[in-house]
Image (cartoon, rainbow, N blue to C red):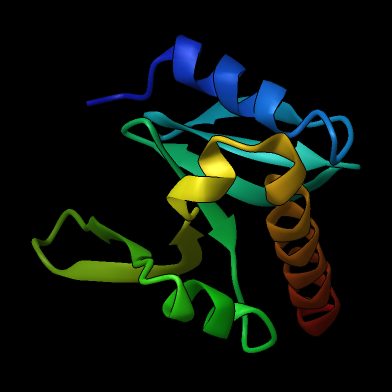
Amino acid sequence: MPSSREFVDHTIDLFSAFGEVTARAMFGGWGLYHQGVMFALIAEDVLYLKADAANRGAFEAAGMEPFIYQKGDGSTATMSYWEAPPPAMEDPQEMVAWAQAAYEAALRGRKKRR
């Protein structure tokens, strides 16, 4: 099931204390961008934030799970995006720290690819 525009708009509002965030539709979900860098995604009305070795532990400590999707051949793939913790989904100020860490992970990922 695709993500609703209402949830996308709510999520963008949630990032207001972090800074400008834009959404682009992709593969039935949405990519969320800050300063031109994708740092989060929305799939089936669930927000996932970019994670790497530096911030993954915080997601694990909060009991969150990574984004897993089913590929065309029936196998699954795990991406480096983890579900946002429920308290952050209700508090823009708490979301700032999670968003900043996700953005930094996305920047580190870009540097590795170059």
